[in-house]
Image 1: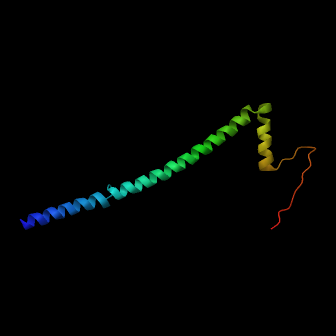
Image 2 (image 1 turned 135 degrees about the vertical axis):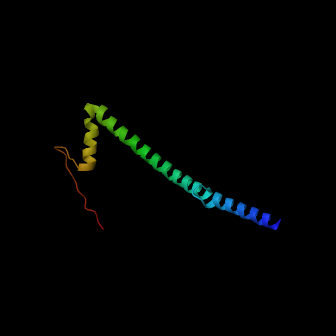
Image 3 (image 1 turned 120 degrees about the vertical axis):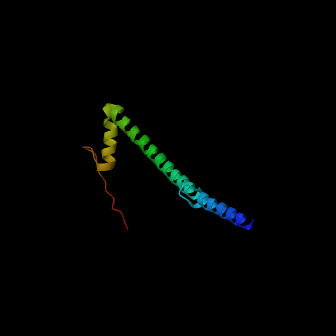
Length: 95
């Protein structure tokens, strides 16, 4: 009878080990949940970036004077464009 009890306890311990520590156990499921949360946050950030880029493309396509204002604004910000007749003032940054 004791041998049967020892065998049953050993089987239960082996099954518990498999349920908790194996590659299909609870630990693996927790890691997958954490990975899913990380990928969901990344997808949300990419979705927001896509929304902003879509709005920018639409502004280029359908803006005033065939998107010239949007292109000009982008050139002013990114390239430092100055129109003819405008005065440019540069202020040095102090450390």
